[in-house]
Length: 577
Picture 1: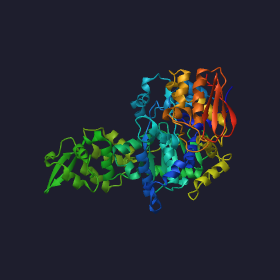
Picture 2: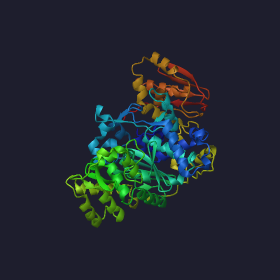
Picture 3: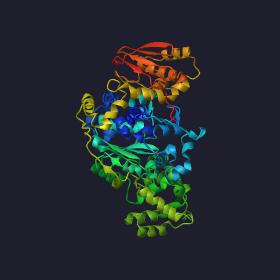
Picture 4: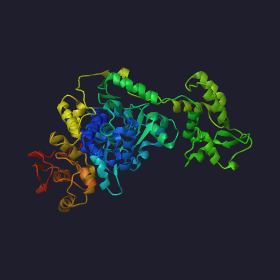
């Protein structure tokens, strides 16, 4: 029997894999709301690092949050953390919601390769999937802040960790709770291979995993900015989510406010464009190292011009606070050994200074035909392909983001506004979300992402636990049942979730080697259910203890979760056809 879409959506909110958030895009903002409800992020405000935050400018507050995240979280994309599934299983699971052809056009794990960049790097090799059969794909579950913090309990991790969606959702919540940035100014974008935030402050700020990128940084030509540019340069934006709703590339209806989305489009496009001048030209060469071989820099010593290879000058930038193309050039040049300079111009190398003077004196648009013709004369060289050089310069100065097309969407309204503001306490935020959960999808799903079994029914949580937690199965595969019981009971009796009612999934318990008694019972149920698929299992829940019964086992654990007294039937593992 097919599961209902609503049960599938609710259970997806529990596990929050990239695939699940692609199918149910409201979940990405539900995770932000779950983090906003978490006491962990509100606890950051008590850290001495944030003392005096209220006296800082918004940008300085954001920088404080950035450094805190840099210090406390690593980027993690390890395939073994949350295990593997198959294309066939995921396609069968979502066959009633999306076609294989649509997935192949939009999802990196089902055939999408973006433009030439992603074709060249070979996606499966890039992510370490080449060691598996072609149908094997990772779950890539997105972590709540608690699951991110708990990485500190894994071997070889000193701090918390998370993948790109986790870090984007963490930033979204922290910018609101700690940096006091209104939700109206925070957007989250997903591409097939990346997720990041756009913050509508000053000229704009992009988050990129743990880091922040301002407009100036976007165009500075460094390796870090090149990495940050990669997604928007090479991928379509699958979805944009905001407090007013969302827009998704494959769904006709959009719930985001149309005027808000139009504003976002305008602001992002302006962020991704800059005028061509000498400084940007230098940044372009820094960004394109191969082109440096075709340029020379002229420098005057004691009234006489000398010449040096551009690549040598850029090499001296490493480890130096000075740059070739700003007002510190003279200091950088002073650091270069005089013996590196030549007395005469270098053959077959373009005079960077002449090109720099030209673009500083003229208002050049690299996408304008007349301006391109003028640039061709100055770019003419046997050393490089002039057309490619100008095309690359145009792309460096003006990225055209591939956003969901507003003209092809039907914008619908009617959902209750989130209505969360900076003056609210954590308790008031939770009360507001609980009050509108039936009238706002993102708020409603937030309590499932929050893993709150006092505010949600157990079926979605248990369905996710019994079907999408392969790591604990693999890790216990060689254990006899008696040894399995000993192993589970020996784990640290502490949940990664601090509050009553909130439970970890089995693979979180297994990965972090800790759990409340209720979580251990669900972990054990996941393992035994797979071993004995024809047996009936159920969990008897009480505020202070939880018992797992089935297949001759009757195991009781102490629990501090305060769960309501009830009987939870364990759903069968369902291997999709």
